Amino acid sequence: MTTPYITKADIQARVSKQALDRCLDDDGDGAADEVNVDAYIRDAQAKIDGRLKASGYSPIPLNANGGPVPSEVKRLCLDHVQAMLGLRHPEYVRVDAKALLSVWKKDLDDLLVSATRLDTDVLPEPKANVGGEILSNDPNNPTTLLEPTFIGTNGFGVF
Image 1 (cartoon, rainbow, N blue to C red):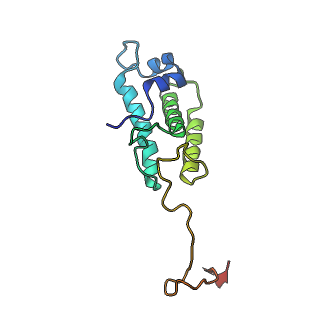
Image 2: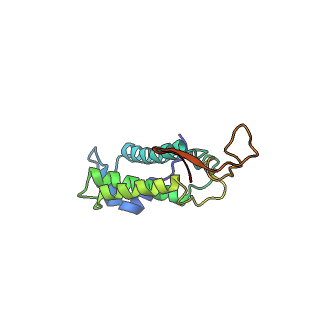
Image 3: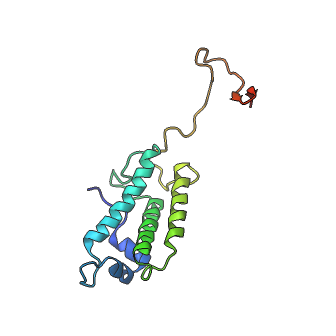
C-alpha cells in the first residue's frame, strides 16, 4: 500500500480524539478500531485519486516520489472523512455532513477544472488538455484559419 495522504493523527486534529474513538469503536474497547480508521483513510484517498485520475492528472498517488502530500489534497481527504463520520454518528461529529459533502464535491470539481490548483510545482503534472494553441480548424489545410462555424437549427452560423 502506498503512503496514505492523511493519518489518524490528522483526523484526530480535525474531529478530536474523543469523537474519533466514539465513532469508530465497534469492538467496545474505548478506542477507534484501526481497521475502521484505515478504511476511512483509504476511502477518502480513493475518492480523490479516482476523480483526479479520471480527469487526466498524473501521477497518482500524489506522493509517489516520497514528496509531501499537497495541503489541498490533505484538506479534501479530511473533509471527506469528517463528513463520513458525521453521517455515521452525527451525535459525536456535529457537522452538517450533507452540506460538507456538497462543499467537498464543489472544491474537488474546482480542482478538476483548474479553477483551483494544488500547492506543488512538481507533482502532479497538470492535465494534458489544459492550455494549448489552435492553429487551424481545417485538417486538410492546417495553415488556413477558417472562421469558426456551427450548425444550428437554422443552418450554419458564425461565432
